[in-house]
Image (cartoon, rainbow over all chains, first blue to last red; front, top):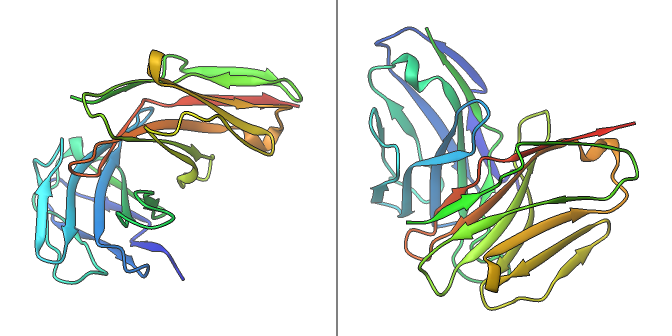
Length: 115
Length: 114
């Protein structure tokens, strides 16, 4: 199992540009999440999904959009990049039952710099 | 609203010292999960432990141990005989049973000097 994979690892955007951060998991987890981590801070929830076709906002959703057409993929879209979106983005997934219930497994992160 | 407080921003110890990282949480849920994650300098998040609110037994895993006290809403993490490889940022997190999303503390940076 590859676990949770994210692409790209690092990206520089100009203000106003758009991009999609990709996230894929191969553990058949139905819950998926996007968090951002600003320097020296903990992670904050952007969006989450409880299954294909179902998404909802977290604490800091402004400036982002998500979709969940399959169990495996949960892309995060930035439409008009702003310097305030400079951060490290982590995708995570979990399953609500079983031996490892509720444990979120994280991808390696995408470092985004908006200039 | 859920909240996790890690009051220790940074701790520096010398190798082989014991160190305890504090975590205090707030929640109105009666059922919840608590977690500790490690973030080494390479940046990834490594899962260390999960504890549910019904299980107040302390846990030991090698040099790591966790003390969960519901009465004081604390979930502290102790590293015994610290090693340089333990140098990292450690996050405590609380899961709400609705969204099953994590609320993170701000982290404690641990530096273990040789």
